[in-house]
Image 1: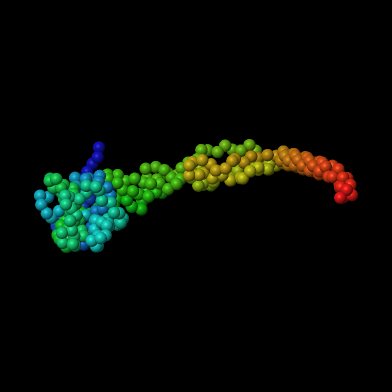
Image 2: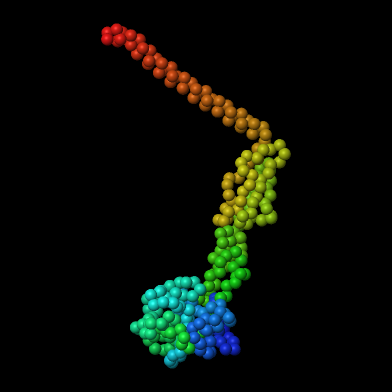
Length: 288
């Protein structure tokens, strides 16, 4: 069940939901005064990001039978400019946002916008107006703050706050670090983890008992996906390590001998081919 609370706050009324809150004035003012009023008491004049938000806002505002209606936070400075939303500089305008025959810029200086909230066919539509006219202010107050999302970015939507978590964190408020599965103790050794935990960015170090040699990188790190980085090292006795080294050395020597023998055989074969050529060379010269 969703709860909506109507608050009476002196000269304004507020509609409170889980996400941001909308506020509107009980007195009229020009567009500049309306924005200043919003910034002083709330966050800013209302910014609409899509048609769903537009319709939701209209559903929360009281109907008015005639002008003045409500200022919204979209404006421009010159005739040839695009309409731009304050704050985020978005240029969103829906396909059916404007009322019939709007924007018409009747007096060449209608650079502010009101939203109709009535029961007619233009309900929820926009109309460009002169910024000096008196209308009601509509503001919003952001619910996101520095503590809303522990390790993430707070994004407000209608009746909802969503936390976009940083890599390596999860949870509805990004409050939980990703965890990696427990590591097994290595044979003939042990491991220790930083902070005693297995969460994102923590490091575990493998160590060997005396008399054993570690083979491979000793450290592994818990990655953003909850998987340990790199292969696990092993602890082997010095005798086994020495035998492995000797074995590798013997293999290398054998390979070297084979390579040298093949190279020698190739040279010998080339020499045998050249000898007949050299033997026939003088007779050829004599004939010439």
